[in-house]
Length: 263
Length: 242
Image (spheres, rainbow over the protein chains, first blue to last red):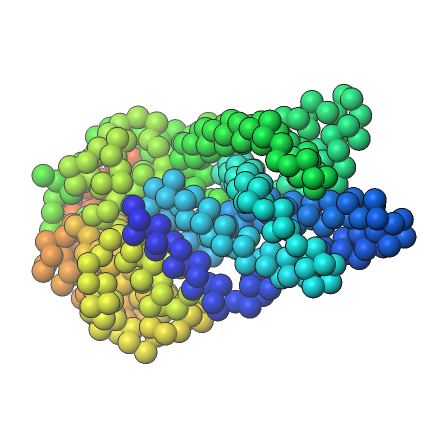
């Protein structure tokens, strides 16, 4: 198992080594996002004084942390799409590589992509806006892991859609996670949403993660209740995504969709 | 133990009967040709043998393993090549072979790649991206990939399509040699009837999902009173009674 996963990691490392546009894409959007929101935050902090600085810090940390979910999701789905684009899935699915091993490799690739992609944005936040997200302490790691896991199960859902609808569903890989953003409460508290929308937001781990983040930013320490809710929801959604993936993979084998997934 | 045992295999889609109750076996060391026109059911049959497609009914046993229950154990001992699927274009030929060497858990991988490079004359191509190769070179690389794990069973879909006659002949020689030295079984889908006559011990003639005839090429040629397999193929394809 380990050697097969290693084989897939080698495949992606070799690909990135030979493709600077792919490497640039990893960091491009998080960096751009950080510049836009960083300057916006600086403006808010300087125009409205010190109390708003906390809100500005919330914006910057929100940008950084939400990018973890987005990059985590894109890392898995783009990795899978690479196999469709290169018409290589036919070789992979008739090799001894299990679907779970393929996903395992994509999850590792996604984690590395996310770390590499966020590094420039993190450095920019520190150098240009004097914002050090690591100053929040070890809780950042807990937020990081939870958001990454959320990105992975969203990706698993998208890959399931690719099995069902073929490469025609490719656009979803780029858009679905962005569509979740209004409910993730990244830049505003849960209470800012209309009452009828709040239960939908509360069903997502992200809303609890960012409520916890705001608590930490306001100096109230780690909100373990929110963290526990986020982790539990992540586990439930991940389990559901795995079941959907297994079902769609099986259905694709029945319908013959694996033979024509690139069309 | 047969390399392949297929019993009453059927694949039905909502509006099509792609494979209709076929049964056959393939013994180790034998080459079996799967012939038929477009839509005859060759690709569907191969896809089911590879586990890419779940049969509607029937049983497939490959190298003693039930493909419905234990396909990964069989997949580790077999391999597949088709010009209709590709290898990652950005990766060099060597990198592609390394990837598949890991996936198939090949021991002494560098030595194995060296041997395949020699066998398929890939030495000068090893460090070139797969996407920059000509169609014929890609076919040779795909064949090298299909032998990376020294498979006991090899499934080949049009293995010499897009190869010039000289290289095609060379590749057929490699396949004959591989079958002889390794005792491997080969299932070959091809539209090149000269190739079928040269390589195949037995042939299955498929039409609209059914096996309409079978036997050694020479026997089929004699049975239909034709000069070669090309004429046998045309006769069966155009016949309304078969």
